[in-house]
Image (tube, rainbow, N blue to C red):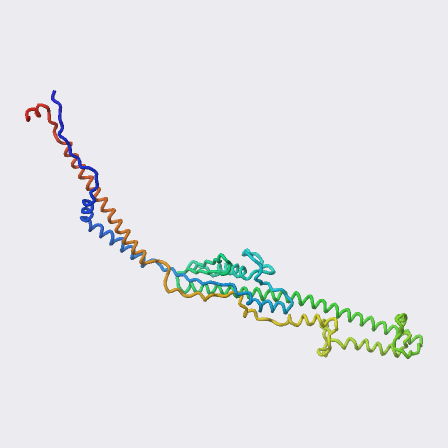
Length: 367
């Protein structure tokens, strides 16, 4: 029986010849260059079309304790306790929480900045407010599509915070002054009313005793006072002495200046001895101090207008475009090489499969 004998087949191995691959890539240098140029052009267009983003920042430092001496002196001179101190630690008021009676200036300022930032932030300007770990400074960063907007947003925010602090201090001062004035005026009114009541009672007593002395025809005494055990029997002094005493009591009312019920012509009269110390407490409360001269915080410098945008980074975008374009060009060239190589292998295999088998007889004849 004749058995078919196939001639040996020779297949190409799968080893990669780097030199051959390099030659093939070089043959496709036009494709690689074209793709790199296209991607680079796209990256250039993107770098030029993307809108610029600008950023500015500034640091705010809490003023030294010595800067609070003016504020404290204003309050102390008025007999008040300042709302702002530098001794309360780690206070974080909520946005809708009322400011307490005594808070730390650093925490108050940070709270105001965060709350006020919502009034300034727009889609084209964003604000970021952060505290340093040691809680000695506050950093404000503004990002906007316009260089001028970044600086304007920060400086506006600082001004709003300043105004709010001064408004808060002034409001607190006036409220405390009003409360203290009301309390002192009430005390003065009570003392002066007591004086008037006592004077009125004394006048009524003398008038009664004058009537008794007149009706009883009591002769005047040589002495103007009675022994203490006879004070309730003043009518014994006689009508003429009692009338003189009544006149003195009546004049006593006009000798003093009453704050609760002033009268024309009393401006130069002295105050009641009991009222005078209270009136001295009212005097410093009548002044209106200027709080705008205070420096609760220290701004390192006004936010500068940036000269260079932070985005887009044009050089980086173009560099990435060149690199990615080259990589994409090489990748496409490798795909083309792989496709061509596979077609070549399939063609060789088809030609081998089409060969006719050789029988033993034919083989022996040839041998």
